[in-house]
Image 1 (cartoon, one colour):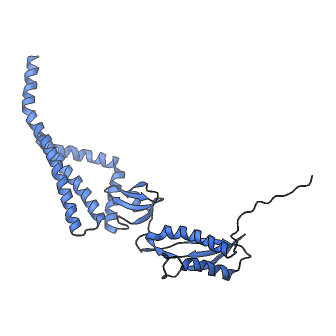
Image 2 (cartoon, one colour; image 1 turned 90 degrees about the vertical axis):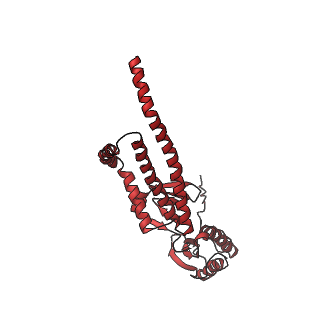
Image 3 (cartoon, one colour; image 1 turned 45 degrees about the vertical axis):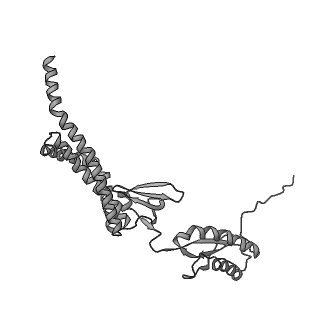
Length: 268
């Protein structure tokens, strides 16, 4: 027992300073990494680097520095870095196979940064989701949904799928289909619909809004109502038009067809 205690004391005396030093290096290193990353982001901001690039490179820099710090701490504990690197390389293939999805997401993030199909602040539709780009990280992209939900999409699937960017052009067309009765006068209906569009303050004059007959449906004459607006005003224009068109058609005596309940009196 005394022999084991003596060996334990020797090991404790030998390795305790190394462990304490390694822990100190780890804590100090993490603090330094945080300072470096924050300073780098400040430099990017001063040079007006795009915020998308700021976030992506900041995250990438933090990961690289943490890996270097981890290897340095391992070396301080007395573990040979060459051996550790060999073990890491041997395990790399297995880890790579296990993390194919993560590697694909990383590659997708790089492709997004290179080709820039969207940037932070853009309103996009991708992978069945619609939202404003909040942050582009190394592996994922975060969106803020239209109902203020946080949506997280892997970069791999995002970069390989279809992306609709509603913000790039700055303006959007609101596509409405308005049906009226076959008894309604087409010319008068077009005048009423056009008047609603031209009187709205957020609808653009150029391109001019369009009102045309779209189709002769089974129970209605459908008009394609196409106002243009700034992207930020899309939903305001959409909802206002729906309400104002209904009120204008009612005031003009133009009927909007809807299903009527028909009661059939059966004689007994």
